[in-house]
Length: 222
Image 1 (cartoon, rainbow, N blue to C red):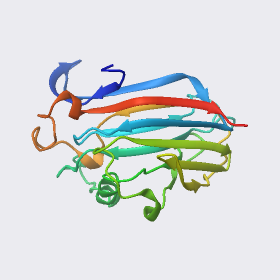
Image 2: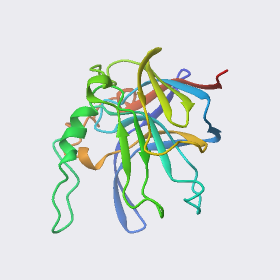
Image 3: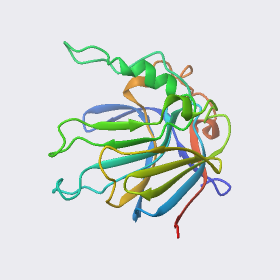
Image 4: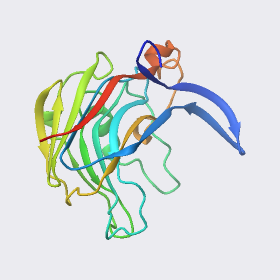
């Protein structure tokens, strides 16, 4: 915490742990209390200026019975501070996925909300319902603070807001009926892989390397 803000720092490292070399550190914070249908949540935040992420999202707790509690994720916002020239090296015989470049460009601006039906024992392939590109916005999440809001209006109507104004609705692939934990995270994506510490933004100040949150609030609507 710095002056009342939560700073989640991205940092270049060179640490050997359990026989593996770890090159970068991020952070993740998960709530104990759960969001439920009928509730509203919003966060005032500013994304790091590095290649790492700024996120505000939620996910169902792990449950062995996917028929009763399917694995779902709701990203209120996801973004990156800057684009890298690298992607995660593919395994032998594989190629770089085509969606990497598109996603890297999209994550440099706007809200990028997504309703995800994750792969589990009941779902063979993940199904993602994303924000339409023309509704995501053109602002840079790493330049200024913005308020990202989500109204879980019904299990089939997910409403998103930017700076207090309604932005768009997502209809998920399955009803989002089960409670989810709120999550904040700063991480590195496969489509925006590290290249050079200076180019990637890791020589900047801690303030600029951090994804910063001024507040998060949640309430039940009537």
